[in-house]
Amino acid sequence: MAAPTDDIEHVQRSISKLKKKARSELKRPEDWQRYGYSTRPELWDGRDVVDSEHVDRVDYQTVDEAEFIERYESLNKPCILVNAMNTWPAMKKWTMKKLRKKFGRQRFKCGEDDDGYPVKMRLEYYDIYQQTNTDDSPMYVFDGTFGEKDGKKEFLSDYELPKYFRDDLFQYVGEERRPPYRWVVIGPQRSGTGIHIDPLGTAAWNALVSGHKRWCLFHPSTPKEALKVPRNLGDSEAASWFAHMIPTVRSPDWPHPKPIEFIQRPGEIVYVPGGWHHVVINVNDTVAVTQNFCSITNFPVVWRRTVRGRPKMSKKWLAALREVKPELAQLASSMDLEADDGLPLSSSSDSSSSSSSSEDEVKAMPETKKKKLTKTKSKSKSKKAKLCQCEECLKKCSICASYIKKGLNPPIH
Image (cartoon, rainbow, N blue to C red; front, side):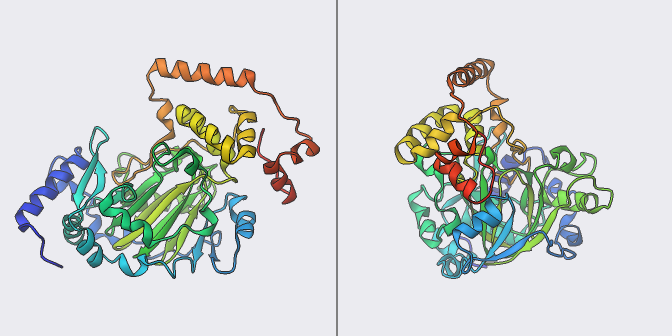
């Protein structure tokens, strides 16, 4: 391990202060190790995981965009992409040694304080922390500003968007207005994200450069209450979840769809459709990049939830779509916003390392804002013209025509 630019005592004091900010409920230093997970790896390291028969490994080099949409995206089915990262510069450049040399004095987000402000640590300090900690659930770099800060923009040139996910419709609302959507993710073993659903109905991809991640995914029909760690057993961190919930969800008596379990390997990209609960833990030191996105396929769900959760942004987005994607703007204007899309509401993980934002922000709005939003909804609903649902009329809409051509049901108008 390279020598720090500052003396080790100063580094340790700085790390201790940041840990207190990130998890103020842990009053004493020893509280970070209260469950002893660092000495009980069998509880979380996935040594008994056999990749689920319900997750495919898809060869990126042989499956084109149309086939991917037909087999996975249109069916809302998770999968793992292989041979998609072979030419990425990140595969050679994103070692901790090289990252520390290049970005060591840059600060990266590794948590949030009690007021929701980011807790940031120098990468050179974080590297020392991740190699020496014995915490149950270590702090986790989950930094979404790397594409905005001059000192970190080089990250963007080290990877490319997978071909299946390039037409992200949120791009049309602009970088300043769109919700947070991309993160560089760095963490040691036992760090991870607690059980959650990604916000606004978006789908996500997670590309692993190094290390191994253990995943557990649950069908959208699974009630979120059934997936929470009982308070008397542990906290909401990923390590506690795997230690206490795996026996429950694997039990023959589990009344819900069986989980999809697998280990993600270096060079693999996990595709997570919208509405799927998932929990992830790092089996060893990992470096990854992940993004959330809205495609034509999941647009109906994302649009409804954006109108509810981000009403001001949705107006800007609709105006932009009228210019660049008029057929989608027409679809958005004609949709029944109250219709049930069949997916659960998103829920940000309570895990200290999660950076997902919650769609339930509407519930937390002041009453005046709620009333204003309700009025806006009722007005738009009364003005909205319903489209005829016969097949001939639906074929006039290019979006619906593409669904009908594939033998799929068009989105609800």
